[in-house]
Image 1 (cartoon, rainbow, N blue to C red):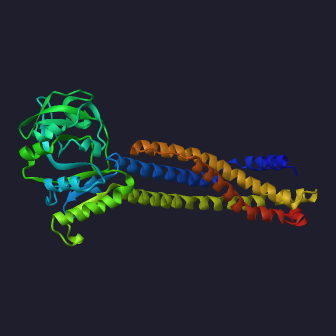
Image 2 (image 1 turned 90 degrees about the vertical axis):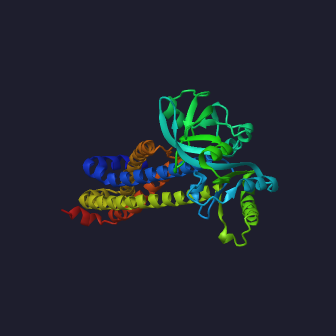
Image 3 (image 1 turned 30 degrees about the horizontal axis):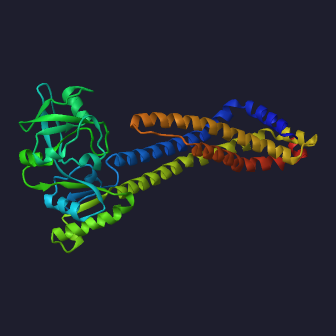
Length: 407
């Protein structure tokens, strides 16, 4: 029997039971769409988290005051920790560690920022002129802090884009305007480009001022909350992290590393850890969704067994007039594969739609890759073969004489 004839017979048979065929396909549709959507959303979330951390700066190490560190130190200064870092720490690091490309101390606080027409409570980050390079800050307008601003304790400020919008209106150019922080006037010299949230805070809800000015007028003391370090390249980050640890242990007269009063956080390690967790969760979610494919496959087998029983006389008649067992089994196997592949196509489309809308709601870039589409087609075909084999084999083994007598 030619393949064209088998296809035609399969189509006619499935078309005669549209409702049952549709309900059977539904299990495959749900399974495939769930897997496609889960993988796309998981991969999108993983990429989004990696992008957010990378936006903090390239080859970044953060030395923070206190013994408790972690991911938070990349995005906040940790003022709740005791301030154990001083100017001399980042100065000696600059002088003695040759794997440092750039270094920036940070003093942070929150304060009310006021203009004649508006006010907002935002993060005040005191730092130096190197911060823009270390933390990949680009300017929308004006300039970032200058070295002379640090030396002269200048009362100048660079606004994050969100803070600018809150104080002066969206898209405004406030360079040259005045703001008041803690009743002290600051002149705006620039606005940073939008960077977005990093999962812990909004990087655009910020005001940068010279760290010398911040300590003089806002925080007091001669300590810094953290030291941001850019390594010369990615390969040197682990070695530089250990060099910083050894140097500061010596500077702070600490013999046991477990008793260190500072924490060195490696951006690359955090990105790797987060990506690993995200990847594992994506696989887990995909596997859970894949269970519904097995349920759908069982539904296919159920329907095909019912079909074999209903068409027993037809099978007997075809065998009686010369149809071979392989023709019978091929038709039923093909019917099973048509159902699963059709369900796979609908499932891929539905999965893409779900991923698209969830991505928009979560503000992440989801993408249905060619690999996941091919995998979905392959899985659909395999399910059709595996769960259609037994009904097809049962149909092929029917005795034509017994089948013709079946009522």
